[in-house]
Length: 85
Image (cartoon, rainbow, N blue to C red; front, side, top):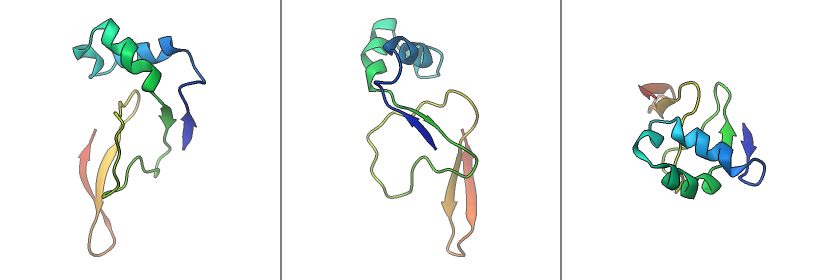
């Protein structure tokens, strides 16, 4: 997993990422500018987990490129695919 915190790239990059997301379609430029400094860019590789069931997370996650699988571990220890984002 690759992570870049908000100090490693210009706020304008965050604004552009938001504007071109599904969430950003609903936001004004000014609203994107308010949220942009809060963004942390996180790259995931196949098999990485963004979140684990039961853990609290107070972030807004925006998929910029690719897909994210929502899975749940079954009682047998296997992963069941619930949804693809």
